[in-house]
Amino acid sequence: MKSVYAAWMGQPVVMQLASDDLRVPLRGTVVGESDAVVRFRLGDGLDIDIYKKMILAIEEDTFAGLLVTQN
Image (cartoon, rainbow, N blue to C red; front, side):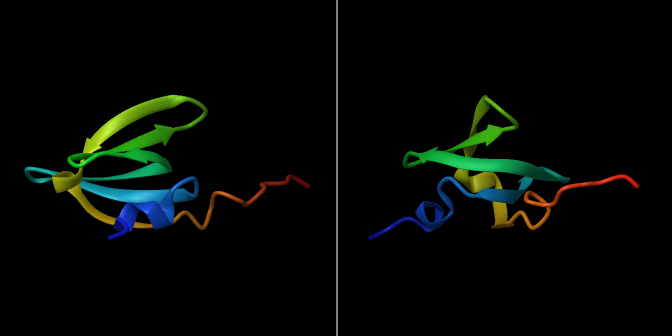
């Protein structure tokens, strides 16, 4: 059976994480997965492992493709 995280592989996402009473959104890219963790890339090259039990939600990062221009 295909993992739920496989559908997000390589795409810009926002991942909602929880640890105790703390809730944190992280922007980045899912780049890998094992049985217990998801490998997540922050920015241009910092990869971190996030325990799957900490992940509350994952969704498309709708702001990732927006360009900011000044007049």
